[in-house]
Image (tube, rainbow, N blue to C red; front, side):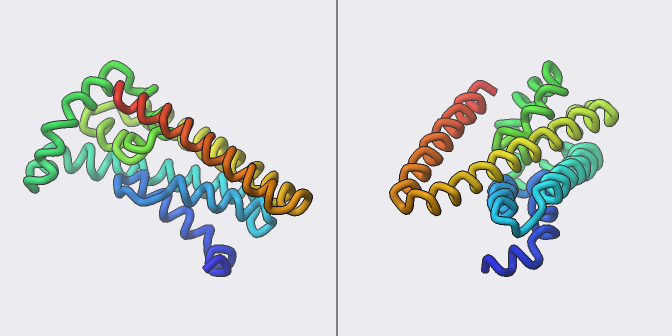
Length: 196
């Protein structure tokens, strides 16, 4: 399986990040982390990983903004009962947030799981001007891809060096620190999502 991701993975990274950004809840950030670690092992260029993830994020968000938000609009949500219930429950609050904090929501939404695949089409539904959306979307996509890509790159490199130098005890310690950091980040993100 690893061989497949090494040989053919970069187009897959682009597609997964693009689909997540479009509005389909697939593991785009997890893919970026995995490819950052693979880059730390010399299998890919970290620059290529970051550029493709950022491009996938920007293109996917623009597709979601136009196809779901602007062209599909509320009629798309009214078509299916289960989607209409979701829209009735969450869209009014999301639209209010977008009206007050549009650019910030698009930028920081890239770093929050639920907003990563919904902010673009909510911006389209809320009729945020496209040029404003494009600016904040591109800035957020580039910042997200760079931050997550570099953190996973250097964390993967540090983990490999620690295992080689100190053995599996260091690997266990590094894994524990990584899990604690990840849990802390998720707790912070969840609390931020609850506020929104």
